[in-house]
Length: 452
Image 1 (cartoon, one colour):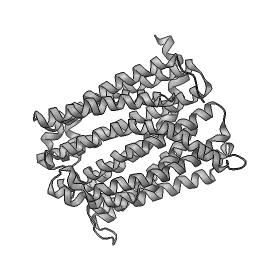
Image 2 (cartoon, rainbow, N blue to C red; image 1 turned 90 degrees about the vertical axis):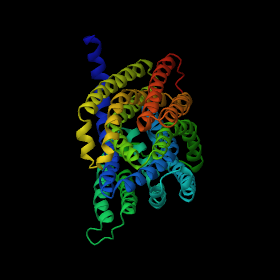
Image 3 (spheres, rainbow, N blue to C red; image 1 turned 60 degrees about the vertical axis):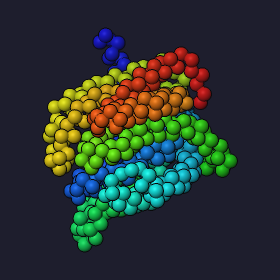
């Protein structure tokens, strides 16, 4: 066993980890923005915390569609690198910018409707009063955010994963400082409360966009990939169809998962502000650890995409082994972490005493679903790397909309298990997604046609 593992470790796990750690830190930086918002908004009370959570639920539920399309940019770039088509990657980048503009218009229209019809979601009067204003501010940040995501996917696909990491932590610092000023009214700024967190998010996204644009425009490391002359508009337009072809099934896959969590959050809102605040805190911590697992999975998909471009079936299989081994070990450690540190983590968020009894069972459930969540992330990203995105989307719809949501509603609302029942429902769905996605990847390995 040892003689088999060492070559796998040297040839596949180490290169994956080298790509993964900047992605992980960048992902954690994004989550830390949410953690900072939660900690700083939490001091305004449970109503403000629940309102921020509901607005972000809706915002990122729709982001599941737009981000999902843009995730195809890194897939196409990594495959072109593996195939040796270095000078074509900037065409994918330009096409991604066009696609992000179309997606920004669509996301804005959808969320603007949610602002005006927020009462549809059946939340408490406090949340109905605060959330729409906060969501309206977030809507202004959609286009810069999607442009940043496109540029991040481009640099990650090239293997320059440190670029977005540094920029994300810069954005985190800007966000925290602006939160401090705009939420509480420090340094001469007005005390805007919850809305201040929205303005801080908007400005930090502008900062991140400008920073990554400057790196792509002026960084000499990207010079080998720049074509001598820009591709004709007709070729860029043709490339957009490749993005849509891979991206739309990815969007359905991502939306199915993110909407499951978002709708679960809406259901939790029906239970009152204390269960809702507990859900917000527990999901915030669980999202933190998931971003580490997601970083491993994304790095694995880049390595696997290179192997796909090389048309190297053996390397693809071994990369799949490496991704799943790393994720399983990491998530087992996470499970122990959640069980041992449940109470200290709950207290760290300084929530009201009435919220604590709801949080602790959720941390124990998080210990269980971490394993499935990490493995499904690995399986889905491996399917993405081999362009098997239609099956990935079908698995997501089955797992989250056919299994998770009905089960969450039945256990949590109909049978009265509360927030723990809702969490148990989407835990079962994650296990279904993990098993089906991994099985599909290994089934497909022997019949790939390598369409580069």
